[in-house]
Length: 158
Image (tube, rainbow, N blue to C red; front, side, top):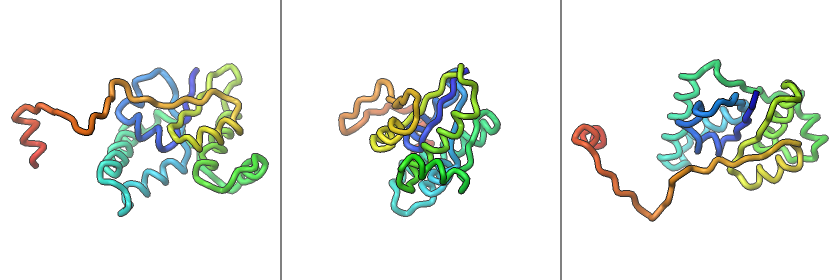
C-alpha cells in the first residue's frame, strides 16, 4: 500500500484531487488546526480562506477515508531528539515520523510538501521520499480568460 502524508500547503493545493490517486491520505491534527485558522483569519486572502473552507468540506465528505495523527505532548521527545524548533512544520514532520512507525516496512510512504523550509526539515528527519504537488497545465499570465454559460454567469453574479 502507498501512503502520502500531506502538510497544509500541499493539501490546499491538491484540494479537489485528493482521492484521484490510489493512495492512502494521512494528515496531522496540526494541519487541521491550520486550516481552521486560515478559514477564520482576518489576515488571509479571501481566495485562500475559500480554499480552506472548501477543503474542510471535502475532508468532511470523505470522513473515514484518511487518517489523522493527533499531535500530543508525548511526541515532544521526538521533536527534541530531532533538534527541531517548536513550529507547526516541525510538529507535522514529527507526526509523519510517528505514522511511519505504524505502517508495514514494505509499504511506500511519501511526505508531500510545497513549503521549501518544511521540505528541508523533513529531508533531515524523515528517511522517506519527499514530493511536491505541482499543478498541471497551470500557467499564470496575470489574468485568465473565462467563457461562461448563462447559468454560470448568473451564479457568478450571485
